[in-house]
Length: 264
Image (cartoon, rainbow, N blue to C red):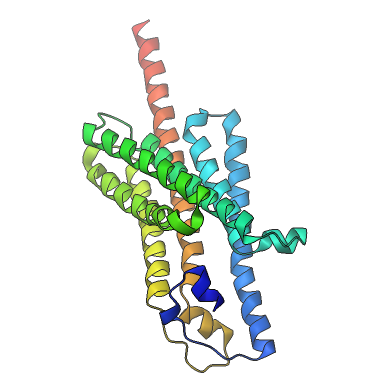
């Protein structure tokens, strides 16, 4: 009854009987995956913030924003807010905050891809697409925060569809001589594949068969870990993309200084 009220795919749900001990081991394993994701996103957010002092903030502020929103989304969605602070906040409070974190993550993802793909002669179609994507992401996030029960689906669709569109834009720029484009494509591919697996197995869940292994049950529920792998994979490759771009800019600066000195 509760699942029907929450609006999930009730006809897809299969009741599962587990012992108390198995349930605790299963919950602990899921908690470990969530804790790893929390620690990873927090660490990268701190590292990228520290780098603000050494490079232009425009290369890292959106990346840091994405890490912070990913941390907050996991912190709220997986119940760490209640466990850590020992507070039982109502769903009418936590759900809009979850939608806000998801929406801000989509916006940050679009913006740092815009910065990384802006080298050379940027095609007009790419600029227009990014502007439209940003507008749609802001609209979807705003509506979802105001009324999550009515407009959350639009926010979740943007969370999945925007990386797909960004990946297409990045693939179209592979031959433009921008060294950071390849890791950007790898990052977005990690995100798209991970979210695809999570969404597909949520709508069409794998049947959980009889087993005494928590690991087997985790593997039968890919949504448990595919989102974490998607965020971790994208974050690592995006950090590589930003580092590659900064290295190329530093090399260009060194060459320019050398040429200036020669002209003098």
